[in-house]
Amino acid sequence: MRPFSYVPAASLEEAVGVLARHGDEAHLLAGGTSFVLLLQQGLVDPGVVVGLSSVPGLNTIERDGAGQLRIGAMATLGRIEGDPLVRDALPCLSEVVGRVATVRIRNQATIGGNLAHADPAQDPPPILLALDAVVEAIGPSGRRTIPLDSFFVDVFETALAPGEILTAVRVAAPSPAIRFATVKFLPRTVDDFATVTVAVRIDPSPDGRVADLRIALGAVAPVPLRAVAAENAIRGHVPDEALLAGAAELARDAVDPFDDVRGSADYKREMTRVWTLRALRRALAPSERVA
Image 1 (tube, rainbow, N blue to C red):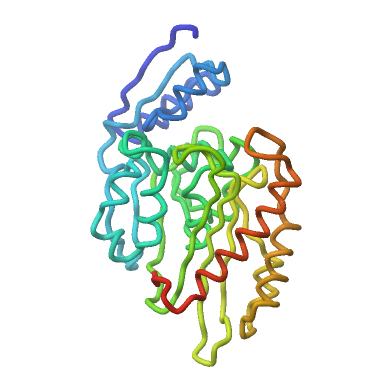
Image 2 (cartoon, rainbow, N blue to C red; image 1 turned 120 degrees about the vertical axis):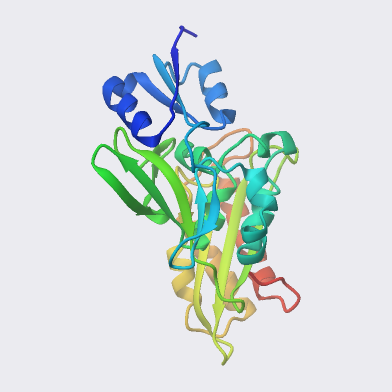
């Protein structure tokens, strides 16, 4: 590694200014769990590293004026897991982040760093896609929000413009009637990346039909994605086993996985079908915990 300068930003405005002055030479540092690996592998070679840990307000978890939960980008996964607001409004998110890697990683990794890193195998994106989350960003042109389903562009690439910083994730608390299920297949150890991750959200109607739903997939394409065709196959219908099986096949057809140590592309496609069906069954099971 070549030497680099470290700038502990005291404000978002300072961090944006450093990024603007140094361009591609600058790299943001949040929790550092991914950044250190990238440095070791030679995938990043910054001249300036901008630390965000001293920026006030970036690690807050609160309800905003619209009643949505706003999670600051520097909130660690461990903090999100145990936060009373998250546990009350979004137990599905608390459960997912509580299964990420190890306690040591969860206490260091941040939600903003996780999303901005844009590794398609990360755990939080599928459940956040199912929750219709949006991210907040600030940059030279000011502040803006980006729906999460258009945030991921490619492997390690997001819709953040040059010089922009992800500052928060915002999620609307779902109705108590909405049901969630998240599953993932780990081929090796509990702290490994998954072969496939599936998050399902189902909004039931009083007549037994599915009024709306989300099926979000991770680790099986260059980006976390929603299985839109599978969603459309179920939406508006009373779900039965044949309908769920057909939707799972559509989810399999929606993915574009890589061959790697966690399985071949064909294997991951079949695992997508298997685990999507399991997630749908779990979300519809009478005993399954609702959001």
